[in-house]
Image (tube, rainbow, N blue to C red; front, side, top):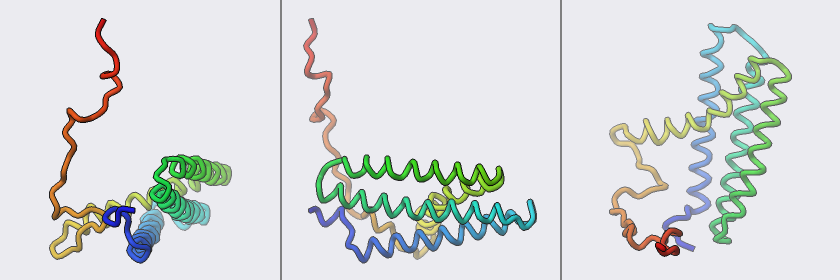
Length: 161
């Protein structure tokens, strides 16, 4: 396996835990922002909690399928993981929608907490002075791109008549 691409288990756990901590804080911030707008609503809180929990579970499934893809060098585990993760999102959203509309909206906000956390960590915090750089990409090494003329095009197989 290419060691430059694959993070060690310790680095991956730190990466995941940092994202999950930001997810919880983002969900808590969303709940605090909703208090003056809609008041204390247990269904809204349940929706945010369900959405955040499910997005964290699905992120773990994504990590597992990515690991399996890297070891097997096939795309099957990622595709399989996708077909596991998407129905989970749909089922949880449907259950929240059955409870109430506010619960469903809060569930979607919970789903988005992971993406907001990534934006906060790698879009905002990483640009602050003295911040650690993204561990997933070494920006100090120049990128070597393939020459586009060497790419295999399916159109090249056909000759003009």
